[in-house]
Amino acid sequence: MTATILNFSGCDVVYSPEVIEIMSAALAASIESLPEPVSATQVHTLAESILHTAGRGERDVGVLERIALVELRIVPRG
Image (cartoon, rainbow, N blue to C red; front, top):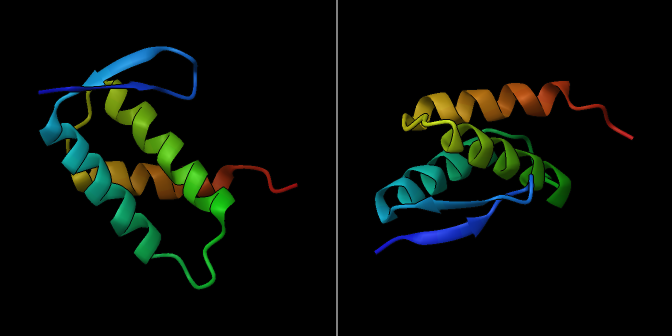
C-alpha cells in the first residue's frame, strides 16, 4: 500500500508506508526539539522541508530532522 500526497510544490508524490513512518518520526523529533510554544507556521515549515527532502530520496530520520530544523532557522520571519 502507498499514499499519494500532493506536496507543497503542487506535484503528486507517492510514499510507501515505511517512508511515511520515517517522515512522521522526523517531524515529531523536530517539533520536540523546539522550545514551547510551537506555532502552526513552524510545524508547516518543518513538514514542508521534510516532504521536500524525502521527495529527493532522503530516508534517514536524523538527516530529515536536521535539514528541517536548519531550514526553519533560515526562513525569514514576517
